[in-house]
Length: 278
Image (cartoon, rainbow, N blue to C red; front, side, top):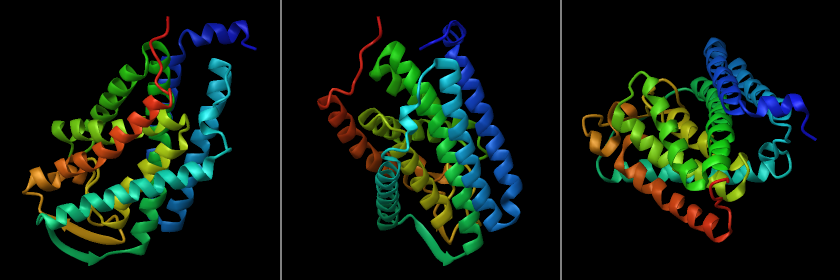
């Protein structure tokens, strides 16, 4: 039952939740950077900041909206994460192999297990915090007010544009990540009504990109961040994505567009799309 206090808070739930989860995302990033001095500490810190963010998200939903955050229910958590992780890894591997076939690879060498673990912790925290913010808050509340179509478009655009703050960001890269990554993760949530599949997908893509192959990710430089260091020909921006990373490549957009369209079609057929609230 919603109390009078919660009824008042619900009127401002969007700015409250948006501000709170954005602050948590920024704080988690800072904490993970400080913990990067040791691989095991960094991995543990990434996992702990992820758990803390989910706990805060659940508490805020109860306190501000008077609802249970069923989208992060433990029921089906591992199955959802597993499916998302498998899809994310498969899509990135398809992307990087196609770039290689088309002549975008320069060199491939072994790098560091320690960097691999540090990046694993950081990417787990990034995936959890960004999905809580962009799908758990922005998409969910927009969908309630304006319908599923508007929520997909606006949340994807917002997701892409926020990456402009990264060091090597470009406008095209931000547009590409919004169209590819934002739409795909929104489609996962729309179909399943769970944040676990998009969290798994988001983590797997970023971790494969930065933690396995050492590529630049969303404008964040790679090279010393992964188990391997796959150097790409950044002068061929139209193929490799340049300094922004493979996410800005038309290859990645094509690879991600196929499952995104299929998931959206499945969601439509399953009756998961919602119309604008009256």
